[in-house]
Image 1 (cartoon, rainbow, N blue to C red):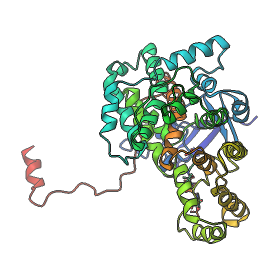
Image 2: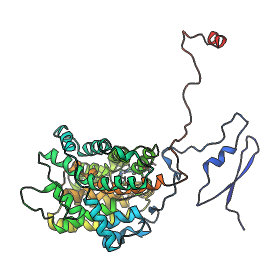
Image 3: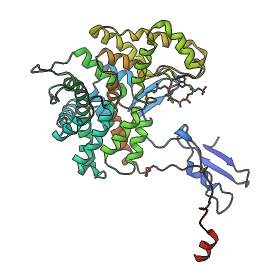
Image 4: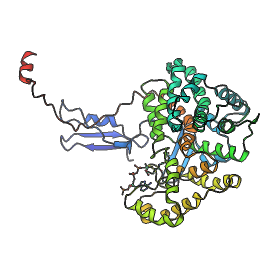
Length: 434
Ligand code: CMC
């Protein structure tokens, strides 16, 4: 029977090494045994952007990029989006199992208990420029929370971690909505704990003078599904930032601020905003072929297309495309949808995109839906960050309780100058003095 090993022969020394294969991986540290001599550090792997490196074990999210499969704790994303609420999915991601009715009621109560923010937080949001990007406001206010909760540094205490997780899931929508209201020159309204997680978020954003805000049930449901789809996505750039920063044992607010920063980039969660700007620039369906030609010449990217892991249709994009019609039925259609559909139609048949297996990702349709829901374009990455907070925290908890994890510290291949000296420095004399 074939052994689950791989044999590496070092042609420099003739040394032969049999490496066990476990879970489809070899242990990179085993390669260090291949040395040319006692002075040699040993063989390392070189993997910029972690293209082929598993950095952790995780039982939270599974993706099969070739088949277009996404599962949270084993449940297909399609089933969760159709049958479950965001509150249930958040519980599932953090606890490993879906909540029973009493657990769900308790969970909702715990989260809503933490939706308010300290009055001083509003004061420093007021200090931002009137046109400050809400993602910048969210990132900095989340970081600032660490100064309000100095107890959060006790990351070794499970009860303390649980409290910070509840605080973050409760407060991130409030901070996000206040960033929006500051931008619009609107007063900050208090959370309404009678409402669902997404219903309360809509209240925090859009409540005016009415005594009780009543969210539109179709929009509330649509946002709930959007939140479910964005809740986790295994070891993406921002989650890697969360784990990496958290591995230094800093408090979770500081780590989550770093993850939020990573998410903001246009190659990651900022892509939904970039898609909208791209569609607006394209303007008409007639301009689509010309735009595609520019992309193929390397003059920009087709935003909302392509993925490191999915080499097939992103399952989240499929759900969103179907959901768009429900939102449009309430809010009126978004003319940019026709441009998006034409872009997709051409790209899915064009050799350039087919060869590179570039398909629409979650950000391709989400922005069009958010815009139809009357969110300003720069709120889009914030709408990604709110549900991803749950994923970041589930991954942070998993990282801290994983005995194999240590402070994240990759190696490098040094390409700079070898030792050299300042012209005025007499190295020989210094050596003699030593
Ligand atoms: N438009 C045009 N060409 C592309 C695109 C695109 N959107 N994405 C990749 N390519 C090309 C790329 O130029 C390269 O071609 P070549 O082999 O000739 O050099 C090839 O496809 C492979 O691309 P890559 O940059 O090596 O792939 P990657 O895995 O490093 O990048 C990505 C993944 C998502 C950053 C990239 O596809 C991209 O920039 N997409 C647009 C931004 C976007 O929509 N991001 C959202 C990702 S999903 C939400 C999330 O979870 O973050």
